[in-house]
Amino acid sequence: MSERLDTAVTIGPDHPALPGHFPGRPIVPGVLLLDQVIAAARDAFALPAPTSLPRAKFAAPVLPGERVDVALTRLDATRIGFACTVAGRPVASGELRFGP
Image 1 (cartoon, rainbow, N blue to C red):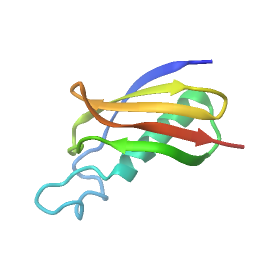
Image 2 (cartoon, one colour):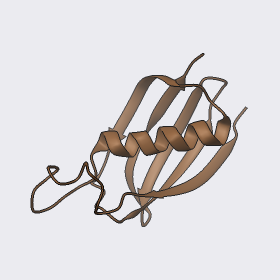
Image 3 (cartoon, rainbow, N blue to C red):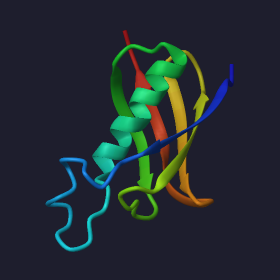
């Protein structure tokens, strides 16, 4: 059962989470990026709420306004793998688990 979906997200420079993260050189908080990945996975695969994050790796910062390409792979009925890149460079990857 390996379905795959490719999508993209962009966090604008006016997002309310950015002003304190970090002053003078804002970067997108990892939790905000994960929130976007979760929303995309739930929409794409009609999933219930997430129950855990068994694995996540943040490889590089994401700057406001950058397009983040997100590859979602359905691993089984409850698990989704994700890989995020910016201009071909890996920025985040991991696995999400969803439950009833």
